[in-house]
Image: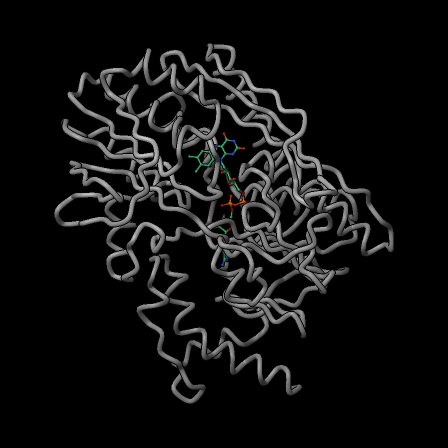
Length: 453
Ligand SMILES: Cc1cc2nc3c(=O)[nH]c(=O)nc-3n(C[C@H](O)[C@H](O)[C@H](O)COP(=O)(O)OP(=O)(O)OC[C@H]3O[C@@H](n4cnc5c(N)ncnc54)[C@H](O)[C@@H]3O)c2cc1C
């Protein structure tokens, strides 16, 4: 064992008490259990975490992909396509995949859950890589090891695509217990499938009164989704003839995308349901009193879906690769090659990325195809020219039949400001049945690409 192994083991054991609690899912759980666990005190099961994971596969240079979301699934598939000799291992903490895109249409009963749910085994079998269900706890970049709850896995290349976490402190809820309660009672539905199931039940069983929704500020996941969700919830209440007022508190100064379309939908379709309030920055929540406060007002609610501002997955920060300048703790990566600055063997993609591209599944997919090529190229000593990701997003506003608007855009690098700007943006702000059908066809095509042949 090298000195570095020893340091790494000690660091890992110190972290593991907190990290394992966090892995269990509750936001703030890590903060609640910040006790340092000395090696001697470690429960017997912990020794397993420090052994090499027993995986039946070994061949070629190993690329470990952490996170079986839109980004990780794409990269795992296309890595094999660009370099069949790679031993690609996809790791996700969940047993199966549930799609967030189109989940708002599911909330409004326009599609079945089956349409959104897919098996990691199908993806791995059909695209010739390996899948293992495990939670990644730490990474030691010096020895190139990923520590998981089933032991460590050595890598030649590592792709981190763990998505996002909520940042409840930015809506005035800093206490770990309050965060956990808030998450369970009023989940945002932007991180896990369990949240979506709870939300669907809330919408189905709401008997009337004020139903609160919000749009977070900062760079949040899927710009149109909170406005789309307000429309889908309103559509369900309208259909069920529930006497409900949907209070949509926008923490931004106005609708951030497809502005005319959403304003028209709120005014024409859901005038009796949606009350839209811009510049409503949430600063505190009284969970027992069911009240939300902003700088100037207080709002009572009967039920709510609270989507807090987000940050890159905590894993990025915990393993020391977050950009200290990034308010949302995004990864410190090369903006064109996606590798961690100074380490061409570790890449960060998808919604944890450092670049300000729209946080979308389509963006993650088109970016993932490029990054897979970059990594395969690196292994062969070949350079791959940068290409922009593409963002495509459908926003459903009406149901029975489903009707949607859409937007498509690319990005270009501005060499003067050294920032990325939108490029070739095309927006359709009138909703129609063709838009609804196109959203289903788009999703079906994506699932086919990621999971099937
Ligand atoms: C309601 C809603 C509607 C949306 N609509 C659209 C749309 O119409 N079009 C569109 O393009 N995008 C849409 N999006 C956005 C899209 O879902 C995300 O941008 C996309 O999922 C990002 O992909 P990702 O791979 O970065 O993250 P994710 O898809 O979140 O995947 C991250 C994966 O990492 C795993 N993971 C995290 N930490 C660990 C760990 N420590 N160990 C092991 N595994 C771990 C998670 O289990 C997860 O499977 C929508 C999102 C929502 C919530």
